[in-house]
Image 1 (cartoon, rainbow, N blue to C red):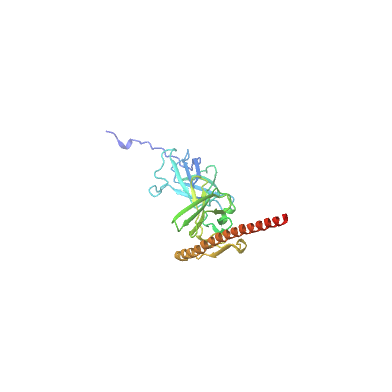
Image 2: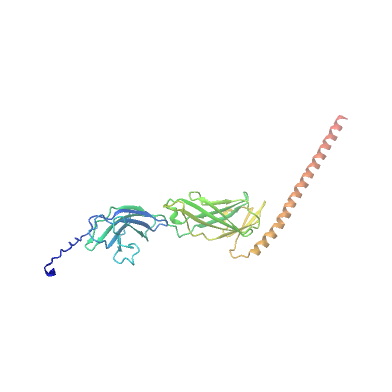
Length: 326
């Protein structure tokens, strides 16, 4: 019989707990499209010296008076923390986290440290990364919409949002034109480095146009991603008469120095009934056609009088020569 009282059991040596000896490994940081987020991923320290209870993300906006900030990512309650779905058993486990609510188009310094029951370990080497640009919430503003009677061109001009005037961006001006006549929309994309102006030809009489402008910006993270600003207010135009003297209606009539004696611009009421506009176009077209016919008739009569006068003058000259010979 074995006397259990005399049996000695060896004790398992306790693991010596301390703070991590080194920082998290393989720390990487990439900007996300949209301007306010960064994507982080890393691996646990090579020598954690215990169970990692949390990670601290330290971040500082460079060239700013704001102090450095940190976010603590707890690992104790695994079920409520999506970042740590389970406690890693090796240093090969990759952790990921999106740092949000940052300033767009800004540079940040990022560091990560780990925490055990004994405290925080050393921080990782600083990483400098720039956030993406953000879409301005201010829309462009249309400033002019007028018709040049001499060239028969419709001119549209606008201003960029204020924060796009002070920085360099890659993208396009997007001009959308809706025709009430055909009920279709035409879009034009112009390089953002081009003047904020568009000239349109082949404007049809009586065709009511609604025009708006927005800006498409290319993401610096992925140039295939285009981010669009809000559209400008809608402006309206309709050509009522065109010829030796033109008449049109615009929601943005030009200043008096841009008008000529042959150009008449009437303020376009944005709430005007479409039928009223069409009626005005019809009543304007009939006199225009009649005036054209009258001009042609006057030109023909002038030609006849010229030929007749020339013939009389030639006959008088010949008669005078005959009298001299006698």
